[in-house]
Length: 464
Ligand code: ARG
Image 1: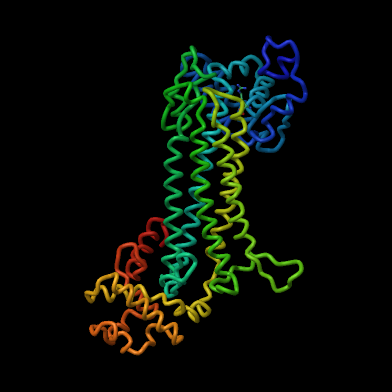
Image 2 (image 1 turned 60 degrees about the vertical axis):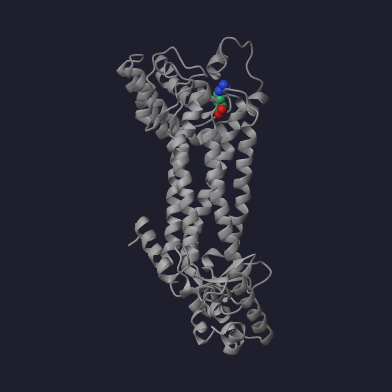
């Protein structure tokens, strides 16, 4: 009988206590304790709903609520001891309630299962985490857009195949990342809708004969939807997978940016200075100022993707409905959330604090014939077919390279040789500044386009 008290999930059907090794192997309290506040939130809503439908008295619900809040305070204060003899945080809190309230506490679990609690608590926890991530994404976007005033006059080479391709405004780069993080925010918002679904009330898997009111609980907890099928929702971890996918994409965006800036910080590129507060040194080479934060952001992407993989493999092949395998979703989900938040929160000040090395950039900006495509488009506008213009400019680049000069430095006769229509006016699209000025299309690096987009982003992000 004493076993029943120590382990509430072992009913009278058991003829022995659990083997210690099983207790140790199956516990989840070591990691699911971080759900405690959401567990209490869910239990309070459940208790009050039970009172609304007449299963509990108003007094019973009120004392359950007050006692749960006391327990929360104890846990907040770090004064709540856990033990693996109670498997998870849900059982810990319920047991504490029973210790304090006796039979009234024993009524809380009416019409619900632990599977219900696990899923509901995880949804509540993840909803808060997604809101935090959205905030962090918005701060990072503000860092990028916030750079635009200081970098307005800087032109950078843009690359394809990591070979110099076309000149772009530095701000066009910053807005490129702003767009990527915007899509991330949209994915988070979309995923949040499905996270924000009430699962509580599926009970074990089939629902319950207790006259619970799930709409009532949904309203109390701010859930937008009430899951319509108890078997589905008690097996569902799609919301965890979706969140992990959205977070993995954020990580890959961060990794692209980190990789780019790591390159830019090399002597070979020499495009950027990172604030020394965000760099680390070498214990042997005194001259080193290393971009370790960026490297770790890139490296931690492996953890995000690994966690997504873990979650996908975890649910593959599970029959309906709840299976204990699902307990393993928490370490992976917690880790991906912690990792992505840490990366976003260190990225924002790093982006804001870096300085473009304009002298070094400008010294080599005319290298690599970044204006060749503008020249080709100029020829096209003179009526020369694209394929011919492409070929002509290729031969001009070859000639300039042979002479060791820029396209703008070739004698005008070299142009006229290819087509008599070509005269001095061609100089109007040569050189990176002119080339950038020649862009027109929506979404391009055309200065007016970029300016308009910066304004739009400022107002979207609430920047003055
Ligand atoms: N600690 C478990 C978890 O996190 C609770 C599962 C309870 N359900 C069960 N049928 N044993 O998933």
